[in-house]
Image (cartoon, rainbow, N blue to C red; front, side, top):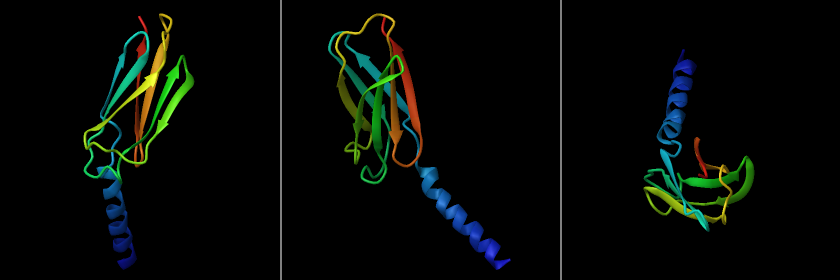
Amino acid sequence: MRFTITAALLLLLSLGSVASAHPPSEIRLNYDGEKKLEVRVIHGVDNGSKHFIDKVEVRLDSKLVAEKVFASQLSPKGLVVAFPLGALAPGTVIAVRAHCNIFGSREVTYRVP
């Protein structure tokens, strides 16, 4: 009985750190049509050296074309990163995925008009 209670308490304590971790709440894309894609990842954190966006990937029509990796998050609100893409053909699908170093990711897509 004592072992069961101890195991249950350890499980609850370990889940507390995962519960405070979360994927990005939002990703905003701004493609200027000629030169670059600006990615704004909303990911509120208390300690950006322990809980942060560790990777942002960009795919064009499902093909990985760019990736940036991070070791911390300087802003407690999230991050902004730019990717040079050049002019893209109408109908090209831009997919961006941002990954939290502790738990989860979010992906958004944009079709070039």
